[in-house]
Amino acid sequence: MRKSYRIKKELEFQKVFETRNSFANKKFVVYVMDKPEQPHFRVGISVGKKIGNAVMRNYTKRRIRQSILEFKPLLRQDVDFLVIARPQASGLPMNEVKQQLEHVFKLAGLFVSKQSEEE
Image (tube, rainbow, N blue to C red):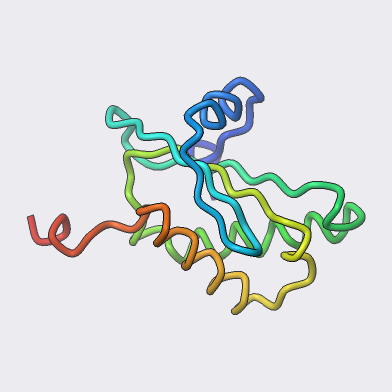
Protein backbone atom coordinates (compact mmCIF):
# COMPACT_ATOMS: atom_id res chain seq x y z
CA MET A 1 0.00 0.00 0.00
CA ARG A 2 1.40 3.41 -0.96
CA LYS A 3 2.44 5.92 1.68
CA SER A 4 -0.38 8.27 0.71
CA TYR A 5 -2.84 5.59 1.90
CA ARG A 6 -1.26 5.29 5.37
CA ILE A 7 -1.73 7.10 8.65
CA LYS A 8 1.67 7.13 10.35
CA LYS A 9 1.87 10.17 12.64
CA GLU A 10 0.80 9.98 16.28
CA LEU A 11 -1.21 13.22 15.93
CA GLU A 12 -3.22 11.78 13.01
CA PHE A 13 -3.90 8.58 14.99
CA GLN A 14 -5.13 10.68 17.93
CA LYS A 15 -7.50 12.72 15.72
CA VAL A 16 -9.20 9.53 14.55
CA PHE A 17 -9.35 8.15 18.13
CA GLU A 18 -10.91 11.37 19.38
CA THR A 19 -13.90 10.95 17.07
CA ARG A 20 -14.90 7.98 19.29
CA ASN A 21 -16.61 6.45 16.27
CA SER A 22 -15.62 2.80 16.77
CA PHE A 23 -16.88 -0.59 15.67
CA ALA A 24 -15.64 -3.95 16.87
CA ASN A 25 -15.89 -7.71 16.72
CA LYS A 26 -13.88 -10.33 18.62
CA LYS A 27 -10.73 -9.95 16.52
CA PHE A 28 -10.54 -6.27 15.44
CA VAL A 29 -11.59 -2.75 16.40
CA VAL A 30 -12.05 -0.08 13.72
CA TYR A 31 -12.16 3.67 14.36
CA VAL A 32 -13.59 5.79 11.53
CA MET A 33 -13.34 9.52 10.82
CA ASP A 34 -15.09 11.13 7.84
CA LYS A 35 -12.93 13.40 5.69
CA PRO A 36 -15.01 14.51 2.68
CA GLU A 37 -12.22 16.66 1.17
CA GLN A 38 -9.89 13.67 0.88
CA PRO A 39 -9.24 12.04 -2.55
CA HIS A 40 -8.82 8.50 -1.10
CA PHE A 41 -9.04 6.65 2.19
CA ARG A 42 -6.13 6.41 4.62
CA VAL A 43 -5.58 3.58 7.06
CA GLY A 44 -3.57 3.14 10.23
CA ILE A 45 -2.81 -0.31 11.62
CA SER A 46 -2.04 -0.96 15.26
CA VAL A 47 -0.94 -4.34 16.59
CA GLY A 48 -0.06 -4.37 20.29
CA LYS A 49 2.49 -6.43 22.19
CA LYS A 50 -0.23 -8.76 23.48
CA ILE A 51 -0.30 -10.27 19.96
CA GLY A 52 3.21 -11.66 20.42
CA ASN A 53 6.81 -10.89 19.52
CA ALA A 54 7.85 -8.56 16.68
CA VAL A 55 7.73 -11.35 14.11
CA MET A 56 4.13 -12.21 15.03
CA ARG A 57 3.06 -8.55 15.07
CA ASN A 58 4.54 -7.91 11.62
CA TYR A 59 2.98 -11.12 10.31
CA THR A 60 -0.43 -9.92 11.56
CA LYS A 61 0.07 -6.44 10.05
CA ARG A 62 0.97 -7.92 6.64
CA ARG A 63 -2.21 -9.99 6.64
CA ILE A 64 -4.33 -6.96 7.59
CA ARG A 65 -2.66 -4.83 4.89
CA GLN A 66 -3.21 -7.52 2.24
CA SER A 67 -6.89 -7.86 3.19
CA ILE A 68 -7.38 -4.08 2.96
CA LEU A 69 -5.65 -4.10 -0.43
CA GLU A 70 -8.12 -6.72 -1.66
CA PHE A 71 -11.06 -4.65 -0.33
CA LYS A 72 -9.65 -1.41 -1.81
CA PRO A 73 -12.13 -1.03 -4.72
CA LEU A 74 -15.06 -1.62 -2.35
CA LEU A 75 -14.03 0.87 0.36
CA ARG A 76 -15.31 4.42 0.75
CA GLN A 77 -12.68 6.97 -0.26
CA ASP A 78 -13.72 9.84 2.04
CA VAL A 79 -12.53 8.39 5.37
CA ASP A 80 -9.56 7.85 7.61
CA PHE A 81 -9.76 4.64 9.63
CA LEU A 82 -7.68 2.71 12.12
CA VAL A 83 -7.60 -1.07 12.41
CA ILE A 84 -6.57 -2.33 15.83
CA ALA A 85 -5.87 -6.04 16.21
CA ARG A 86 -7.07 -7.66 19.42
CA PRO A 87 -5.02 -10.48 21.02
CA GLN A 88 -7.41 -13.08 19.51
CA ALA A 89 -6.24 -12.00 16.03
CA SER A 90 -2.84 -13.58 16.65
CA GLY A 91 -1.95 -16.35 14.19
CA LEU A 92 -5.23 -16.32 12.26
CA PRO A 93 -5.17 -17.84 8.76
CA MET A 94 -5.52 -15.32 5.91
CA ASN A 95 -9.09 -16.26 5.01
CA GLU A 96 -10.17 -15.75 8.65
CA VAL A 97 -8.46 -12.33 8.84
CA LYS A 98 -10.23 -11.27 5.65
CA GLN A 99 -13.59 -12.58 6.87
CA GLN A 100 -13.29 -10.84 10.26
CA LEU A 101 -12.21 -7.54 8.67
CA GLU A 102 -15.07 -7.72 6.18
CA HIS A 103 -17.49 -8.17 9.09
CA VAL A 104 -16.17 -5.20 11.07
CA PHE A 105 -15.96 -3.01 7.92
CA LYS A 106 -19.63 -3.73 7.22
CA LEU A 107 -20.48 -2.74 10.80
CA ALA A 108 -18.51 0.49 10.33
CA GLY A 109 -20.18 1.27 6.99
CA LEU A 110 -16.83 1.42 5.17
CA PHE A 111 -18.03 -0.35 2.06
CA VAL A 112 -19.44 1.71 -0.81
CA SER A 113 -23.18 1.12 -1.11
CA LYS A 114 -24.67 -0.20 -4.37
CA GLN A 115 -26.64 3.04 -4.87
CA SER A 116 -23.44 5.14 -4.80
CA GLU A 117 -21.85 2.94 -7.48
CA GLU A 118 -24.81 3.45 -9.83
CA GLU A 119 -24.72 7.26 -9.58
